[in-house]
Length: 217
Image (cartoon, rainbow, N blue to C red; front, side):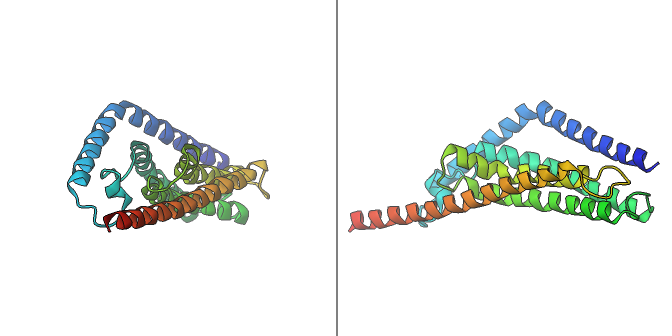
């Protein structure tokens, strides 16, 4: 009985992912048009704005607050976020209905709860990081890593917690728990590279400001 409930939960999760992927594919052209219009609007606003703050890279780059890649990824993350809420409701129903293999298995209970919490936190962190990626001074590879590292961690780390104790009678995690370490490496690399890129951007802005001040004098 408990194994069937776990199977049903995993099946629902898979169907959600397939549905979301199909939705993004069907409406991709409309999304691209909306993003293009939003980008043109921001560019017009940036052109008309006064460049009074030398530290504001969104203005000095023609009002381009976020790149197309960042906006697309942010949109996908926002669409996926409700699945985390659905997962929380599923775990709550397991707890309130006293489902065998969850409430009576402390290891499984703790790892599944940790998987749900990490998924939500890392998705929100991914959205926060996307706001700063395009301001960072980084090479294309490191910018890609800063943009996608947190979303990759949001997939791998919860997957490690859920799949390593998928069996209701599991007494210890299986080898899939190692996915958590891979996800942690991606997350650390994303945060560190973005931090370094923002520090370099700040130094570049300061140098430009100082050179423009000397030229004006």
